[in-house]
Image (tube, one colour):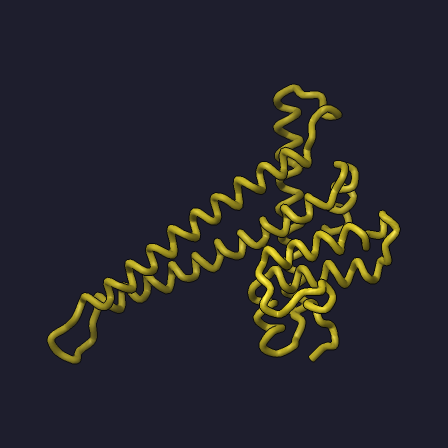
Length: 202
């Protein structure tokens, strides 16, 4: 158990949805960032709280046990930093290949666009997989045997449902990482701040 309470740190209730969590994080991180005169310890606590609550698994673990999954938090932050770093590298390479003057390119805006596209694609995939799971599950109820013996086809369908469920979890995790990346990008006023943060995070 831990005395650290991410809900109290962000000033939200335990039933808060992701949109409310992101809004609370954005509001608090702007004033607490050390580069803007904030307290470094408060800033670390806010980032930790957001990382915990933005990942469904670490949030569930905390809600059920009060335990803060430090490794899960660290992995989530590392995944977010990796996504941002990859997007930044791709944006710079694209600008160079296009012959653009780097000092005239708004890399934050380019990455925000890429994050928005990634989120839209992940949401589309999530909806599609949900529909496939529902259809497969419904099919298992239609295929019946006339005796009590093993139903080979239902077993095959259940295996497909399990695979789709795992795929869905991976897509949802990517969606959470992209949403966190979008929030992070919104906290930077310049490319220099972003580059500095990426260097610290990796």
